[in-house]
Image (cartoon, rainbow, N blue to C red; front, side, top):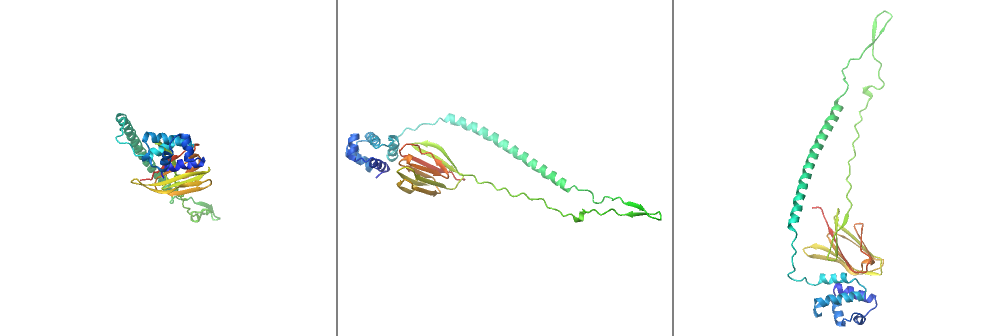
Length: 293
């Protein structure tokens, strides 16, 4: 059974409807409804009718039609000979030239700033060393005090000993500045774009994706796929989880997440809460790990 069929079947059962009930509501033959749930699109009359049947089925069981149709588009084969839209090359080239000029200007500014910084450091250390080496002359002549004796002769009186003579002083080494520890940047999770019904997020300043999902509604279908590259993936979980349940993973690659009922779940990535909306419709997320090269 496909993801689309599983989602429609779960929604139908939650509303307490049978295939006969849905046939009565939508006027679609029961065998076609069963084929949609089983993912057997080959027996349906054509892609145009398939989309119409899926839309009517989704509306009958209370799901958002466009999100359900997006699941069908992802599962159906892409049409051949699709037109290729040419990019506005001229505009892009002019933008690249402007960016090159800005980069050259910034490079020059950084180079001169570095030179000025080096000169300033040299001046500072030379000035500090000069002041440290400069000290009062140790060979200066001390004045002697003379006193007259009873015989009229003068006697030299040595100067009084200073209570703080240089021999009593202890050299105190200058205190060393403790090394400055650089703070590790916090993980950054940002929405980069939304394409084909998928919200793409970039996760940077970390070497792993810490994903946590908690069901706040009745129950919710989840599927977590770790993207290993070269069109390979590792499905970590694909099941219904009930209210109050929490699932968490630490993943070393990018990850794709599908939830069957967006407003019934909370998603957190590396401590950042991800907006899921307030509609009970399926939703796709892709979290792309940006590692330092």
